[in-house]
Amino acid sequence: MSGGLGPVAVSGILGAVPTLSIVVPIHNEEPCILPLYDRLTAVLEKIRRPYEILFVDDASTDRSFDLLANLVETDPRLKVIRLRRNFGQTAALAAGFDESQGNIVISLDGDLQHAPEDIPALLEKIDEGYDIASGWRKDRLDNAVTRKIPSRIANWLMAKASKVDLRDFGTTFKAYRAEILKDVNLYGELHRFIPALASFYGARIAEVPIRNLPRANGGSHYGLGRTFRVAFDIFTIWFLLKYFTRPMHFFGKWGLLSAGSGSLVLLGLAAEKIWTGVDMVQAHGPLMLAGALAQVTGVILFCTGLLGEVLTRTYFESQGRRIYAVREIRTRREEKAAGGAR
Image (cartoon, rainbow, N blue to C red; front, side, top):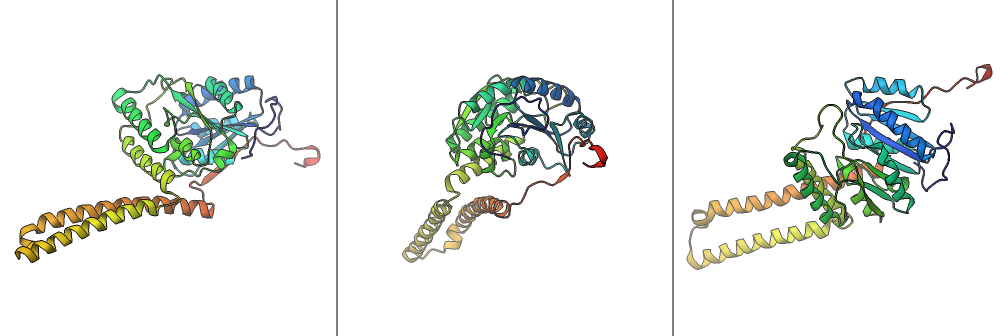
């Protein structure tokens, strides 16, 4: 990806380096692909900037890739990336971000719940100087019990944990300056928290109201069970933002508390033993053992999980590893020049 804002140019100029990249992760969205492509191109032509559209097929099992493969033969500004297996939305977005060339990158879902007509509003905020323009689904159409209420709780917790004042972290519909994405390495399911991760590097973030449209076909790929994964991600983000560069401030605090509590318990039991001569195992054995095991096990589990997160980041970032594997990348075939030269 290239950094910095480029000049405004006419998007119809073939061969121009794109200044705007649209990244769309796809998984079994066959009925939505053609309508989405038509709406995207109609909006992007009006914007009048050199653009590219990157569809990332996350191992669809329907005809999604076949439709995209046909489209790519007719549009030189379209690129289709096909992953070897279903790596998930975060990995699909990371693949699209890595392949994008624009100075501004916009991501949106491929199920037509995001209106391409809202792209100019996101771009307006980027042009004003913000690094990230994040969509806000002001009027959500989701089920109140399974989606709305858990989402509001998660967004509130995320805002408190990250100190980023957003009301909707979950939507994929966002615009980024490309250089911001270079500083953020994605893994797990952290794509929804890119603004929080980017805030670590001082990104300027604005929130833009967007429309939340009903799904044109099929059902949501997410359910109530995702709430628990989001909760784990929020804890991870909180830890990374607050303690990533100084983990001992976290582990040392809990270690001191655990060791101090254990020492007090042992000193108290020793004093009682000396003073009364009572048999500690008979008098307090089960309760003492249960409490000690619960405390130690809890600290070990949390510390192990958080250390694993840090080790994962170190592993991927220090070695330049990617969290996905590309099966193939298709662009329109180049025309042969005179004499057979390419």
